[in-house]
Image 1 (cartoon, helix red, strand yellow):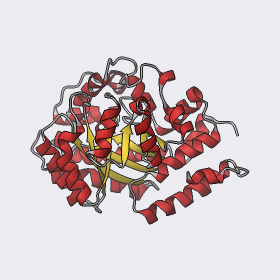
Image 2 (spheres, rainbow, N blue to C red):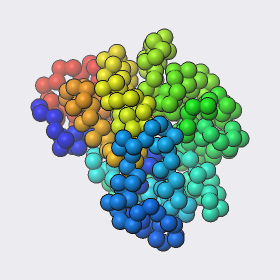
Image 3 (cartoon, rainbow, N blue to C red):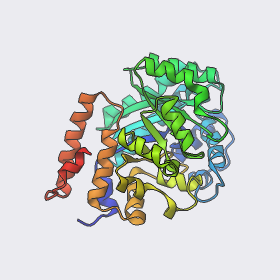
Image 4 (cartoon, rainbow, N blue to C red):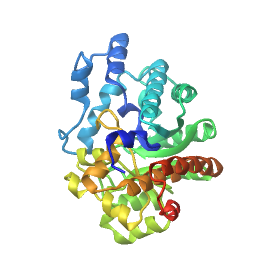
Length: 354
């Protein structure tokens, strides 16, 4: 079967690494900016999108992150957070994402005095509204931030525990990686682990494999956000592979932040062929000008992923969701049934379980 962009859009998908403040509609930014009196760098959606889309304009992750000041400037009310959460889930559902995990750090939405509780509630209300209107299933991941005091990450961990089983499915550590080691936030992750909350950490994006080792050994990460530099340590790579720790790969973002110097050097193909559980994600739909369907198209065009490979990438995503085991199995059964429609003669079913 020929792989087309239309086909990839039809396939069921996950997006496990998607930042709320990096996935806002430009039209919404402009409307909210006008409503709240926020000065923006452009006055029409097209020009604003061009300003916020990174392309090849950034030198590193830190420059990439500077654009988030624009989106965050209009995300300081419950109304705005609820609306943007809702629209993100609606946009994901439109490209047939069946399961979406949205992550954000509530601490970045307090400029107008909102409590952390109200901020998290607003995001959950928006996601729940989208679930009721579409077939998408969602979960919220709360992020500690590497570049803030560890006491604040601990507070965010406490909020995560409070919202466990109420829509919040995990805890993360995000932000600038260089000079901000994950182990400084170990107390927050100790609380998370001891309350049986699932964990993912940004690691190996702007720093070497030792950052990934810290995420796993000091913080108990069950998934790794990016993991682009894992290839530099073969022993750690084998450990990650043996434990089936999923990597949340974001191809476009990795190229834009210079986690890899150029597309051809991205390790996705090597990781996949070696047997790592790689998943495909957007990171930031606005800044990286992408969708999950587009990222799969990039995997096909740039790394020769055929339909069987793409189906396995998709299944890796569904295997890695932060859902209770029974819910995960039920969802996987539905996905496998759906994927068989696109190659009913597929004799590689055993690979579905790797």
